[in-house]
Amino acid sequence: MSFLKLSQVTFFYPRKLKPALTGLNLGLEKDEITAIVGPNGSGKTTLTKLMIGVLQPAEGEIQLEGRPIAGYSLAEIGRRIGYVFQNPDLQLFCSSVAEEVGFGLTNQGCEPATVEEKVDFYLDYFELAAYRNAFPLHLSQGEKQRLAIAAVLANEPEFLILDEPTIGLDAYRKKLLEDYLKKVARLGRGMLLISHDAPFVNRMAERVVTIENGRIQSDSGRKGNAVYEA
Amino acid sequence: MAEFNRIAGEREMPYMKLDPRTKMVMVICLSSLALIYNTPDRLLLVLAATVGLLLIFRFDPSAIWGYLKPFLSLMLILFVIQCVFTRGGEVLLAVGPVPLITSKGLSIGAGVVLRIVVITAAAMLFTTFSSRDFILGLVQWRVPYELAFMVSIALRFLPVFRDEFINVITAVQLRGVELKKVSWGQKISMYRRLFFPVVYGAMLKAQQLAVAMEARGFRAYPRRTYLRRLNLSSADYVLMLFFTAATLMLIGINFTT
Image (tube, rainbow over all chains, first blue to last red; front, side, top):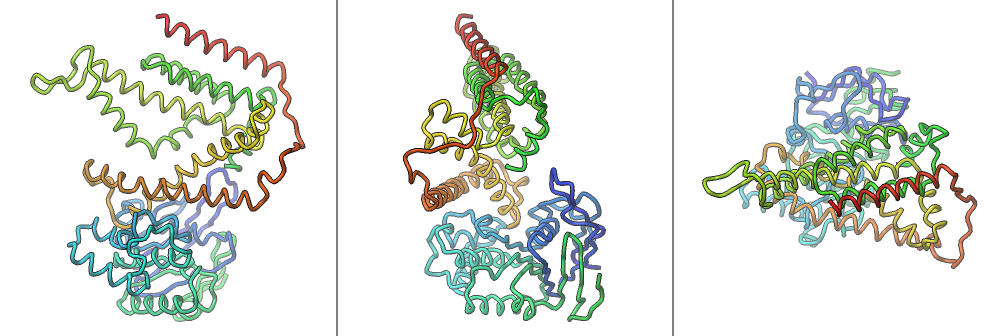
């Protein structure tokens, strides 16, 4: 059973005649790294928003661990799937960088000492410790991106969806992110990457799905074994 | 927003192609009545008139729900505060000797909620014409261009602010916080904590917009020319006169009765 399963998913944006996604079938496993690639406007981000229940499909069904996603609350999905938005500004809402990283843990009832320890770890790892008390929206684009990733990773979700995670990161920070994501993957957590960064996708992904005009054009299959070609 | 304006424009019948200034007068009249009236029955009548107008302009009134939904908790809080703290009339609910809800409190509370609904619904008329026509209309009314542009930007920022708030609520829930299950006390404390960053974030965006405008030569020359001119038709004059006279009359009646 796939961790996330999309069956015949079609989605229309309001007042648009052309569907953003048409009859999509896709299964994502909990222990693999999948990348979705495709041109701008092909429906990649829309697809991820459907996977986390922010958007609802017009047709078809999405299942999370065998249950329709419509039956989960956003918080229940958020505890299982960590989602990093394409634009980090959309997910930074706290008054300080440290509060941002610890927000989810604090509100899920973790002990203050545990929260503090994890916040210190993620701030150090993503080299944000110097900005601990800074206002998140005052950071540079790359720093905001690292903070958004750190805030999601701190929750230790079972699966990660990262929409353009390397945007604004320099080569060194990209390498740090890659190392950390590989470490997360070794712990048996799966992830879905949306990226235009071809070298990053090649280094990270075990499976590459190509989307064009709201349809899956190709799916390399696990470890690059071609299983589907449109 | 532009897409919506285009669609709203397409749905407008030729006989309803009124000047944006006429629609502005309608919005001012309806909002003024909503601010002056404080009884639910009168506010309901203004709401009915507003919904009627929206239907005439082929605007789906159910869309108002989408605009109001993020502010439901705020409206509920205002309703409860007015209900509990306004004294007068018949006591409807009491805890021992202390009256908790009175008929006047209930009426004022319902009035506050209806006022917000009417003003939101009336503002929907602004979406039936483009922001360019809005500026042009104000400039032809001799409002300085800078001021007209600022008002238009402020109106454009309202849905942006709403979307920003929805994004924050979504992001909070995606961090595992079950907003529907936390107590009202926790909810209020969380909204209080989120309020400052959201407002400050909107201010930062406004600042960036100002820099972008300056960079593109905003106010570089003292005089501006316009490609198009808006012309008021006789229907526009009649409707403007009718709405202004009716509003002044209703306000007069309200203060004399």
